[in-house]
Each structure stands twice: as C-alpha cells, then as structure tokens.
Image (cartoon, rainbow, N blue to C red; front, side, top):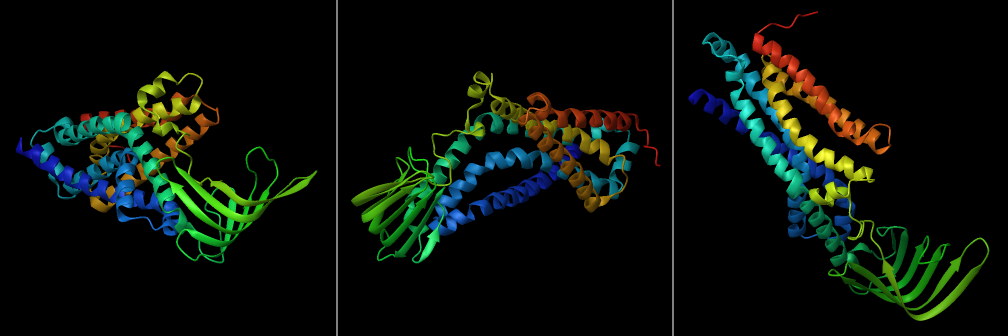
Length: 359
C-alpha cells in the first residue's frame, strides 16, 4: 500500500540520520582514546579512514538497535501529534496495520545486523588492530621529541637529548620495569642510536651505540657496557598474536566455548544485540500509540530513557557474567528477556486498544 510505503520511507530517513549521527559520535569517542597515539605519530588521512571503516561493524552493533527505537518514536510521535494515528484507527486499521512498516524495517535491520555481528565484526576488528599497529610501527620515530620523556611504549620511559634527523637520536636514556628474564628494572644510557621499524613483522627496534646497561634488584646490581645494543620496544597496543574474543570468528567461538567464559559471553552478545532490533521494532509502535501526542522531542526523550536503561542492564549483566556471579547466558540475554516481556504487555494493550490507567 502507498500508506505503508510512505511510513516506511519516513522511518528509513530517520533511521539513516540517526545511524549516521550515532556512528560519528561513537567513532569520535573511540578516536579520542587513540588521539594520544595518533598525535604523536602523525597518522595519515588514509590510516584514519581505514580505522573508521574497520570500526563501523562494532559501532553498528550498538547504534542500529538504538537508531530503530529513536526513528520509530520520531516517526510515530510526529504522526500522533498530527492526529494521523487517530485517522488511521478511525479508518479501521488495527495495530498491526499501523506498525507494519516499523516491524518490516526492524526485521530487515535484524537480518543485516546479524550478518554484521556474525561475519563482519571479527574480521573488521582484527583488521582494525592490524592497521593501528602498523601505523604505530611506521610512525615510530615521530613518537619522540628532543629533551622530553616519552612513555608511549608500555612499561618503558625514554628520554632523548637531541634528534639530529628523523630516525637518529643523541643522548638516550631508557628505563624499563623489567626485560627478558630479569626481575628488576633496567636503565640504559647511550651516546647515540637509531630507531628501526618493520611493519611486516610488527617490530620497533632502538639500535644504540656506546652505552651502558644497568640492572638492579633488592639483592644485587650489575652494569654492562656495550658498543652496539638492540633494544626491542613493545607498544601499548596488544601485539597481533594476542587475539581478543571480538576478533575471533563466530564458528571458532562456538567450537572453543567450553571452559572459556569470555568466549561464551562474546558469543551470546553477537546474537543478543541483533535480536534487540526485533524487540524495539515492536515496542516502539506499541508504546508510542499509548503515550499520546508527545511529538518528536518527547519521542526522542522517551526513546533515550529506554535505551539508557537497556544498555545499563546489558553492561551490568556482562560485568556480572565476567565476574562469575551469573551464567553467561543471563548476562547477554537478561535485558532482552526483560524488554520482551514489556513489549508483549504493550503490544497486547495496543492491539486491544485499551488505554493505560493514569495514576
């Protein structure tokens, strides 16, 4: 019907605007955490663009369910303010007819997000970390400034007196908490050095000349002079060999879920968040039809309140599951089950067209 196409078109426009806005906001929130790395390394625009693209699946996993609820409240709130809902009910259209466009859109978003969560997410997160690490390696020399301390490399503080050229240093001081099999801190001073990087192998090496290595602990200390010494630097970003649960393919998560709590939690999360699209796709029309003429601003405020509650429960559930207080299933699905019950209630009264009692 033309009516359903019109509502669907308006919903789609609002959904697109909200998803775009949420994607930018969530990306900037993540990018702020990386600013310290990028500002010191002079990342190229192409690197930032690739990172933005690789982060989108993880961002969409959060933003799409939010966008569906907000878009529905914006659309149906506007329709309620303009008395279009009353006209549709007066023409004999029931709840399912009025909410048909919203339900269709939520099903499409559910299927799309399920594909993103199961297939694209682990691949994009692995590519994101690889791109980020390669950027750090390629721009390693830009980390340092003359006569200043740098702690960008985990557990290591480096001071450089002078930088005659981009990769060459003079007057080097290095302090690290521990290195190799040594338990105590390590202090290295050197006359000069050069920083070398190998993006393919993910290595950053500081080759120093004419210096001294001093190690010490509670019982003893030792010194060793050198003419040439290669010091391997490790960045604050995890090395590529350390795979996080969100970087693991879904099938591998399923196969290795036994005895691995974090993998089970991630597996439930990949299915629970897309399923939220269906819940909000039904809750939005049912609730908006019973709250009266609240308009766009009222609908936006109400949807934000619901979303804040949902994601608070989600974060709380995942935290309790990680600590072992509740099973991983309840950690991932408890918010969905709670809001499913709320949705069933509002859908029932919307379908029966029974007004909510005001207290």
